[in-house]
Image 1 (tube, rainbow, N blue to C red):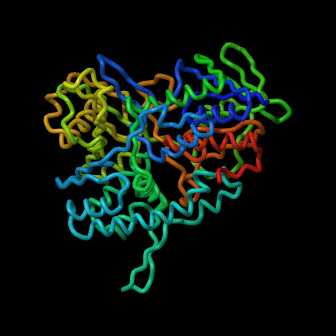
Image 2: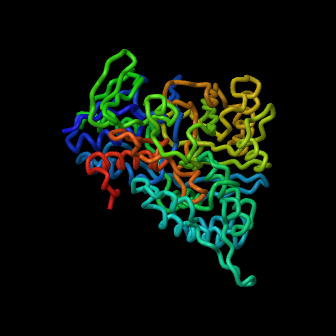
Image 3: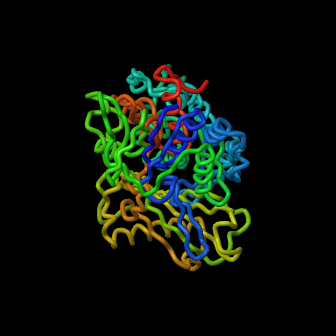
Length: 503
């Protein structure tokens, strides 16, 4: 039985802890805040409840596997997992809108043809076929296996297939997600639909590799899911599974140093000076913080994977307590597209300015009575992805951007402003509850191609005995990817360096 010290109680860290405990190891989790879940948090006031982190789940099989492998209770016995239908409603700048059925290719094709015109559905359906090919080529190395030592092969080759053009007697290979839109979809609204999936992950579709086509494909193929009571209930279920497997949690305990001896990680030191020995250390923290906890480089020189010092996009969120109940048939998720998407992307790629443009806004309206005090009220979450350093410390900038989100949401929810009882605004870096080293930061899943700039640091490090877990490490950000990072780290510790992932 090995002693495992886990730094942080985020979703990936808890997934690793539960699996390691089932394997017979003694696991202690040190969390500097007073609760678990990392960015999967909840805000409550006056009987209203809001998810302040992820609002939906894709690839629920990741957590189903976690619960199967760590006990006899399946996931659905621990949380109320429901499929969201429609998967999303989209309101475009020209006034057209479409609701996309959940996990139904034929339904999506028919909906697009009816709403956007004949042929649009066929083009989107053909794109999904090619996106599936990219998914099949990258699923194992980018989700189910530890990052290959020769990861450069993932960085150099674009897995998204080229499209033949009969008239030109040649094929054209889209290099970026935006080029897929212009070369293959040939409709501004379809391009907006495609690019919004990348933008939601903090990616600029103009620079994101074409392999990012797997992002909308995952939603299409595996569905979009919600946890009754809010996504915080998923964090609660994972935490309780850890406790039942005798994982020990120490809250309010900040790790200030990873102890090293003879070139190996041998424990952690806490802020109160306490030192704890361990055979393995699992760190679920951001790269910059992990670097500060160690005394040696953790990666090879010249590593071009995701730069830990690069600015991260953040999420600007407005929590709304509304008078009046949710009308029957309202979409759980509505995406409102802006009139000038290029201005939004320019803003996202800059340091921001005094006049932020109107963004792509996601409106979440769960059909969940647990989130409001009664049927005569509704809780709604508005969000947009923004540059982290865009003057969010200035009240004027925050106020203008809040107005942008409310204006956009009004297109999806008429009469919105008259219904507002109160609102809570959360801008990047302004609401620090200790849940993250970069409050509000958005981390994307790992992607192939792009010279490796869209891969994340490996779960192993150059310091034996030290492992990385969670959205800042392979296979990247998002609830399913964080859960898979926990599975990968547990496999590497239990089976050793020869571990090659789930079969």
